[in-house]
Length: 245
Ligand code: URA
Image 1: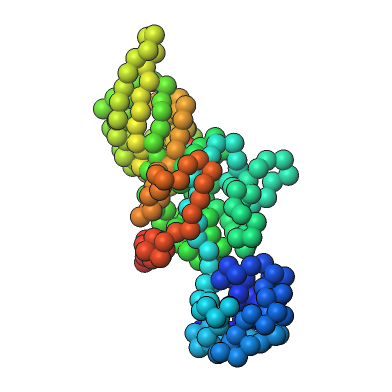
Image 2: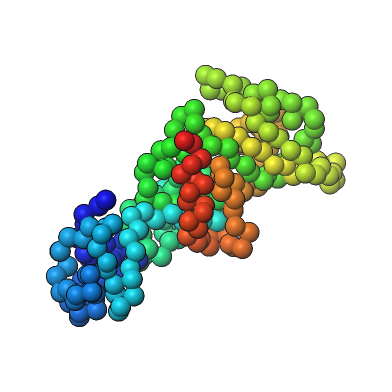
């Protein structure tokens, strides 16, 4: 049970920014337990009090969870002096201490979970507990069964340990003007810096396009075009929370 100010309760529920909801309260549009209240600082017991705005129930929601289809060209950070960040892509009115769960390289596209739930993010990213992450990649080079075997045995990418077993699936291999190009899916369970690019580099190939398509139980919603985002559904939030019990 939480005990929080009325204006915070309403802002957390997405009724507006803190100053916008203060105005709504002043105008008498907010009721607590069916009585109009005009003070923003009264305390709400989140699991007991009934709050309404224009006579419609407002439910408390402490945390925000979004799925972003990250476009290339933006950095996975909360703030940056020079570059556009993934948080800049979220509508200002929705931003409440949001941060990305892990990082994708600036040129990598695809699924990025954005939240303000630090406990859930830590669970997903805790060392040794990283959930599976699957990527679609275009590769300059001919990916073979031998490459698949190397990925599953672990690769020395210059860190103190080999990479953990990764699942490499070949989608297609074709040659153009004596150059091979391959399309693959790769699943890794770690989150090392430039991990997939470095793994392919070690086997003499180059990643030319990388897109994350899933993280643990969450799959990128194909309806989201690059740069679009949506809230996670309640079911997706539960799946994430239970991903590492
Ligand atoms: N591996 C990479 O090389 N880059 C990413 O963005 C994610 C995984």
